[in-house]
Image 1 (cartoon, one colour):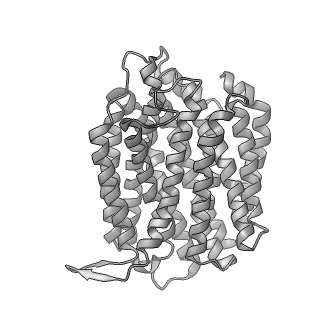
Image 2 (tube, helix red, strand yellow):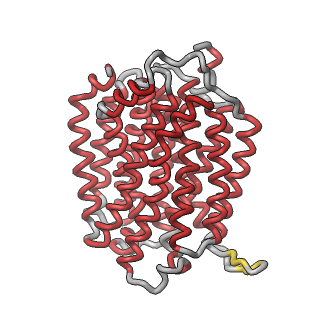
Image 3 (tube, helix red, strand yellow):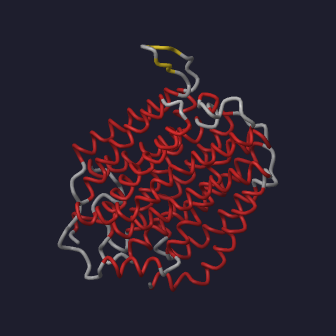
Length: 410
């Protein structure tokens, strides 16, 4: 790999990486908007209005989950396409797909159409995220790949921060009817996210070139790569980490409202803190720390810290202590996510998109099961989902401490 291939990962100043990370940021804005807007505006959705709270809680959890279902179903095929057709087609198709689905969600009032659009949005997001992570892997070496994935994670985290902020700001605008359409606190956040996706897609078209070097792939076959990854614990660890984070993200609005009596401003502040901590620490800590502590050890410590943070939410009640617990959860996530991505890419033999497509499906499996199971358990007993996630993450962290060197040698 030439010197020019690795320039800019430490400081993404060139237009290519800025546009690429901007696309990731914008896609996650749409995800963050849904986290805060959908639970508040369920009365707009036919089939949820005037129903009991437990049924609404269940559907909100499932609506959050099915976004990941689209990514789960698409991941392996998208990865293969990325290694055959290149990264740029995935990135562009994904961005414009996100723009279309966000705009459509703004105006639908049908529960079943909303489900379909959430799945389609997840498919579009999968195209973008697999293409973007593969493009970053193309431009990094094994020694600086964790830092590149940390920049990707920072863009994700900042988008999750900006999404609730955008939803909160636009959600305060009063309702207006124009040409028979209602523009209000539900419509405007999704329209804003869709417009940003359209702009980011244009920037990607102008500034993101193809990064796939078709002559640089390793000798291993795709079948061997699939067997290697599926038979290792890496994909399971990826799914578990996203299960814990998504369970928190998908249930916290309702948990905080019903158990802690928090309003929209307080829950938005918690999401903002979570995203800021992940964004700052992924670039400030993960990259420099990898010179002293390997990625598997960082990830193992991160699992333990995640478990401690989400477990603390069971016992704390005051707003400052809740924010502290969320900050601990975010710290653990910042250690886990980029290091697992780096380990997966390193085992790919040069087939980055295929490996990262499988990783995307594993992430999406966790993102699908987290809100689905969390929402169901929350409707039964308020603290039960956080107890399950805390125990799972803590146990995996301890086990990974013993398996760490083997994972890096795989």
